[in-house]
Image (cartoon, rainbow, N blue to C red):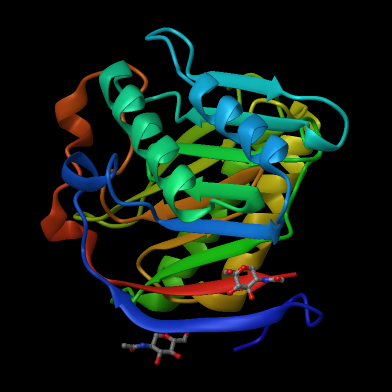
Length: 268
Ligand SMILES: *[C@@H]1O[C@H](CO)[C@@H](O)[C@H](O)[C@H]1NC(C)=O
Ligand SMILES: *[C@@H]1O[C@H](CO)[C@@H](O)[C@H](O)[C@H]1NC(C)=O
């Protein structure tokens, strides 16, 4: 496998992820959890982190929130965001799961991040807000290839180029959904999503970088996700996002379509 960033340490998790239904599991099972920056002997820092985590509570109307606690060497910053198209009840469930996951998995780490289909949560002992981060990279590729792979790739790249472009336009509030009819029975669904602390220009660059990584891992694949800390890009041949008009049933992402995915982590 070729990596566009040779300096990165490549870890391939050969484990195939079980097919998951977005409706059933997205609020409960993290896609990935990342903990780093061990610290010991600073109960004050852990206290600030705990305080930040418990403050990252969304109200039904805010799909985004930040928090800070402590000062000096014990300070901590946090951020939580739900994807803008999901129902508020799913947002609350997802962020509650994220809080529990970070508290349990990243205790003793000064840098914790967790990704779900529907939400993202992060804390750090340095102020990261507003700084685009494309270091940690998570790639999920469908184990199945498209049946007409060359033509499919062409259609998919056209779609994702549009997603990246619109992500930088700033009109979509960091959430871009696009579709491309591939053939009589196949529509390709494309999504770009950024955290709300970065500018729309940074969002466009971030999503474009994610899309540019896709050919390195996902050529011919039926579905692919490139996830950074500040943004992600994804395409699938089934609907996995809720439409603009809010009609939930047309986004019924059934588990029978979800398939299996290989997971690749690139870590600086
Ligand atoms: C961090 O802590 C974990 C658990 O105690 C340990 O396995 C790991 O080696 C530590 N990492 C560093 C960089 O100290
Ligand atoms: C899918 O296509 C990739 C090339 O992008 C190839 O390496 C892989 O073997 C193909 N997988 C299947 C199941 O055909």
